[in-house]
Length: 258
Image (spheres, rainbow, N blue to C red):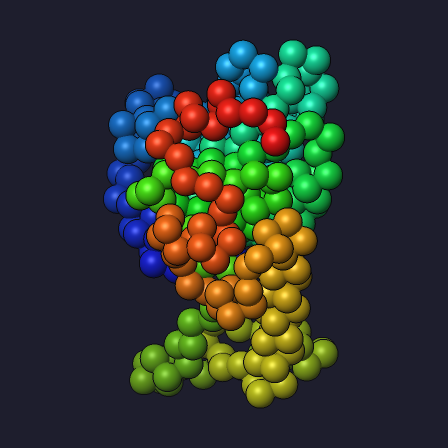
């Protein structure tokens, strides 16, 4: 669940990183800091906990991956747990800027946000796409700035079919398999019609669950607006993707819990 164009730009930026065996750990950290900035952490402002959801979403990420502008659902879950059990905190704000990411652990975290016993609000001044919108939409309120963009509700998986390139090189991939769905998408092969239909069913099911999760909280969003498209702030508010437009996160932190 990720915005493909933003994902492509992200991969290209990561590919530009030049680290050799001679580069020491401190230099690696400094290089990544210059490219992606400091890793954001949860902070408490008055009675409000601000939990960052910044970068590509994954689960079980390494420290290097996190420094490359990725965020782990396990860390978000821990932050949420800490905020819920902190007696000082009355409100939880998710500060979101993400193109989306992997689906691992996403549904479980969305459930925790939806059922959070404290008041929750999502906020963004940039982009909230795909998996990130899945999470952000589960807060009780969702505010964005005028320049923000949200949506990209959809699911995809992609396999590069390089079988023709292999053939041009005189290489034919032979796959010995048991089970007609085993080894789907292995390099040098093409998907069979049955394999493609199986994967399409899986993607459709994920998309259906995504839309259902959005609509249980954002009740005015229509199915036809959840076909992978994204919307600027004004249209997002008109279509029910968000509940309001604000000037900054400061407006969200000081707002009433209503």
